[in-house]
Image (tube, rainbow over all chains, first blue to last red):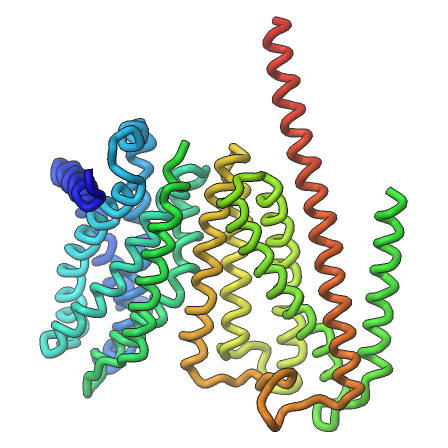
Length: 224
Length: 230
């Protein structure tokens, strides 16, 4: 079985499992909406300030949401002992990790589709004019986030205190990603929007480096 | 045991010499005066910390390739020691910065990077305390260690794109940089002492980790034998 096909099967399984309950999605979406609301009480921003801090708000929310929602990715398998079935299947470790990352990418993507208009509406920051470029930044940022996050979810699943451990491992490693994503997004939300290529390159470099690292290391990750 | 006492004594003597050289041998700096002398320890601890972090990375990669627990012991030993040196860097930095810059802390490139690296290696050490099985602990912490190390150049790059306030490199810097020859001698001596101190500490910590592993193995064997007797 080719890795691509195996990854697609794992992806299909993840989506089917999620669609039965939708518990991961609904929790994550509501969590991000709560954070966006809290932002108002913490800073009470004017539309100008919302423009300036909006990029940071969006990415902090996504990073926190990601560090919480990626946890079940492997913990669920561990709790139901289905991790053994996955390991015994002819799918390679990378296909499993990548299939799961792809599923998490879709879940976080759906969250973003709800989060972004909510943010735009609540803080009067128009995003339609830059929607395409913003989607591009969100794509690059979310890709790196879920790739590293899914690998670390498998790491945390093998430890105690996993719910607390995952953010502890994930957030500091994601600092360069968040740095670049916030800068690029802030450039798009500014009065005269512009896409900063430097930060796009940093984001792309992050994605390439950590995709390669995940590919090289995931055999060790799932072995028994 | 005798050898360790000797090594500790020599180390203390070297540190004393380094302190003496930094305080009395090195000439006075023309604008910063006495406070500049903290550099001999601040910068040399920074070097030792970076060397220690590089050893952690090498140990992590070697463990994944060779699957010998020895490399895991080296990994944890050098991680703990380099966190200690990073802590020294993060404490001596603000002591210097407050009188000279007027603030304890500023989010400049190198300061930020040291803080981020410190956080990353503290996370590495916490991860290790939360996995029971020695083999699994070694594998997952090695994976995390490799990820941490790969992120550092990107951190450096993204922080560097910002304007930097930290003094520009004086050693191996550009054309206009340079040290007074006596200052340079004292600086290299202090760096050497810090590196030796780092190696000595890593060796001690490595030995401790090996002994811990031995105790763990013996305990398991004893439990198994007790089962058989019963």
